[in-house]
Length: 142
Image (cartoon, rainbow, N blue to C red; front, side):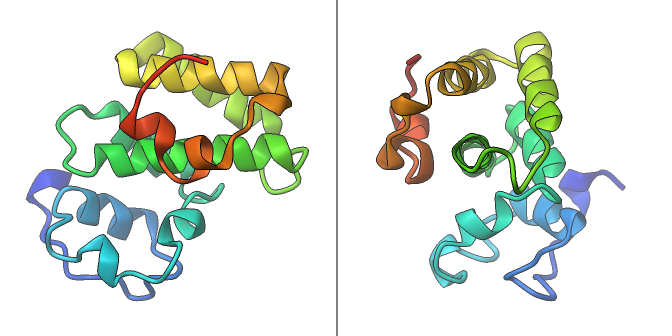
């Protein structure tokens, strides 16, 4: 059974979803609306444990929750860069950036470009753009 065919049965713990739960939800996001999730759920799931899943969802142009995944990737990148990579390894972010450049479409390539720009110039950080979805809603290269 493919992920898209998997029935989403909810989160055992919405504050700490498993990669499988997040993936199943992403293909059936209407089952659990984001406004019913804990406050700042995007900040909670944009972590090192779930970044691989979020990245896969961001690559999938058919994923209904792709924009949410991209939003979380922006949070993950900004959090790592701004904290000096205390919460996640720098090499993982760099690997994801390279993979997005190689395999991704324009949205993923833009995320990779913007992440490289923020790595080079941390002063480009803007909370609205990176953590509130501004760069997802109004995709542009920095």
